[in-house]
Image (cartoon, rainbow, N blue to C red):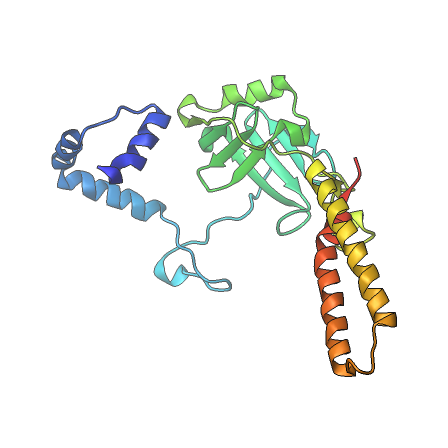
Length: 264
């Protein structure tokens, strides 16, 4: 029974009726050989094979799946907000996205409404159109500034049977600012952009900074004035190394917070 819990939870979330083991057994017993054969033919005709890079499976009768569309629709153009550089085109017969990403500057993906196998719809307005040829076009109002009227036109043009309504997303895509990449935030050094320091990080910075400073002062005094000929040079050197190592260990949390965060 425990093994069926994931399937039962999925049925509840999807709004499907929860069936008992007896009902499932009856459905399986009702499947005919002709139905299995029909499903196998459909799977063989639409299956995708993944092969290592640089190889193909044309020798087995497979045709390479398209990675770009040979055409784009004609319609209203929405440039990507921020530093992305792509453009979304919304036409009366479909949607296209093109830009510098992908295999070249004219790389494009197009999904016609009549050939839309599925459209994933989120409550925040985001849409993902998947064509029967495998092309995918993301329509994100927050990324391309698509107005509500245009989004309503897309929803009306896609066949209702292809619409898949999804629950809210944890994170809505946002435009990428030119100042957010790591290289731009540090003059090309590749360091990540600093974030605002939290209260806990401030406490860590103060406490470990004080401990590290005190330990550094004691280590410095012992290094400068702690040598004793009777004590022995080797023992003195070992003590110095241990003290400075402890200082570095205590100071590291404060240094890490200081480098990765900034004051509010």
